[in-house]
Length: 115
Length: 114
Image 1: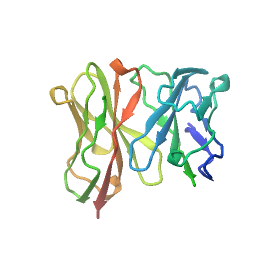
Image 2: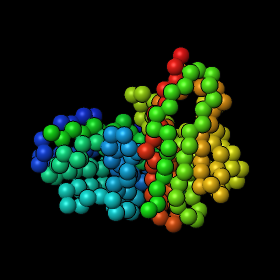
Image 3: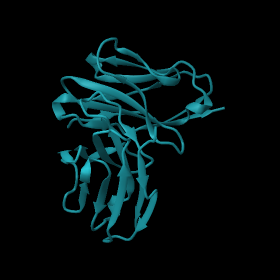
């Protein structure tokens, strides 16, 4: 079974530039999550999709971050404009559904450095 | 504020030593508890989880964790660590009072010396 795919793996940009990350979840997984993991901290949930609808985006900085999951499969996360403090690893995860008991399967992450 | 705390940020052990990593949470009500592990160069993956029933949960690779509700704790243990256990370990909690959102602790980086 193929895992969660993410691209790019690494990205270096200057502040105020824009950047986009892509995620392809495990086939058949209805729930998709984006996490931000700052160095030395645990992952923090940014947004959760159930199929193509947003379930929770309470921790997404909506003035600069946006995400979509068209057709309920792939998802993109965008930052525009980027700030220095956005330097982090962006993790995508998926699960079959979300009743609080499912295992979330994580991708390799995209490491972003904002200069 | 609701949070998940892992008090040991870095742990260094010799092979065959026993391991206990602490995890405390501040959520009330019903919780589901998880330990995830990230081996060097690999994805974050599930080590074990607790939903209900026997508070002593066994996971992969000889790991176990004990849920103590009165202490709001879910400590991870292994009787004898191996060099291959070198990794970062994350405790995570889903509180049904706070939505089905998985909240992670800050992680504990374990190094096992051969």
